[in-house]
Amino acid sequence: MDLSILMKNTNKADRTAGIPKNSHRRVLQLAIPIILANLTTPILGAVDTAVMGHLASPSYLAAVSIGAIIIQFIFWGFGFLRMGTTGLTAQAFGINDKVELQMNFLRPALFAVIMGFILWILQIPIINFALYLFEASHTVETLASNYFEIRIWSAPAVLINYCLIGWFIGIQKTKITLLLHAWMNIINIILDLVFVIGFEYGIVGVAIATVIAEVSTTMIGIFLFRREIRNLRCKISILDLLNLSKIKKLLENNLNIFIRTFCLIFAFAYFTSVATKFGSTILAVNAVLFQFIHFLSFGLDGFAQTAETLVGSALSAKNRIAYKLAVKTVTQWSIIIGFLYSIIYYFLGPILIDLLTDLPEVRSLSKEFLIWMIFFPIVAVWPYLLDGIFIGAMRSTDMRNGMLFSLAIFLGSINFLVENYGYNGSWVALYLFMLSRGITLMIKYPQINKNLKVVPISNTD
Image (cartoon, rainbow, N blue to C red; front, side, top):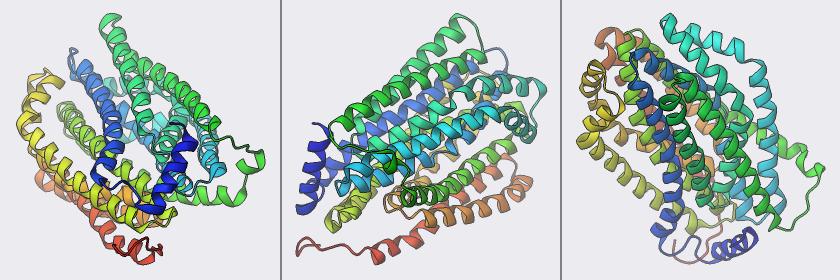
């Protein structure tokens, strides 16, 4: 089904019953491809960790951990390109605005290209400053620097790909996001094994493999985008692209999401920085445990991103039934997934740790601290779910303010807790951070319903 037909059918549904009567089926149709797509990313990270974890020294594993955190800090800082694109696209999709549907990819993509070139120019001061903050050993810093210097060259492609993923989610074609993620991560994993195991390129091989995969994925995504917009049969002009009021709205929304994302990544980066103070072994343990968080976050993001597109399209179409069904159904499935992750981590956690590293001390300590991973999914469900709802509702200001408050709680508690409880104290601080994120958004959530002036569709509400 092409995009123009899908929009026509969706709008017809909006005027009647919103999402299909079987709301669970609709949510799963959208969420499952996103979950499968997202899960390929932590699988990739797990392979990177496993490849480095089986080399002779824990320095390789520690270096990948630091290098990846720095890259993720930078790239994920531009996560607003994905989230902002999804929210705006979903709302244009809900009201069948063909011009803005295209512009909601092209405007952020133009910004992505500009920022990618800026990152190229600033790469040396960025890596020097980042390594100064981590204070790792000279060997680890050198390896991490080698990794970063290669990975940064894929910056424009990575940022454009964020816009592509957000756009396809916004038009409810989540299977394409699965295709793009699958391509990138399968190619990356294959090249990891070829460059590291086959050619023995070490950490440089891991970085080169990722760059090749990221650039090729963006090229495929642009081809698929062009195929979709041809079906709209709607001409656009440079004036549409440079519409100042639309650009202002885009920048305001994205700035709030950027601040929110920056705070989130900073919290996790600071958490890893604290771990470096306990030595290379604990840092390696931290890298292993963070793979559990990656698996969890991308799984929960599947339903959060489903909430983004369903809530956004429902609100723009003023469809109360669709809005309520979307929130209710996504909430139910998010809770189920959270508990499922906890069960999996409880029973299979030790096995997963053994797969990630064969270093005896790292294995032993990782299993000792595994308890934090078992309960983490139950706490993390709420901030992920509410983020999706607020993005779809374009309530980026509330997200920004809640994250700033939560970061203050985290930074204000972690040093005290670490000083008194060691490495365990850092996990307590991270729990407080996640709880605060959920609570601050829950407080603001009723305002969405209060300010939502939708037109009742039927007598049933």
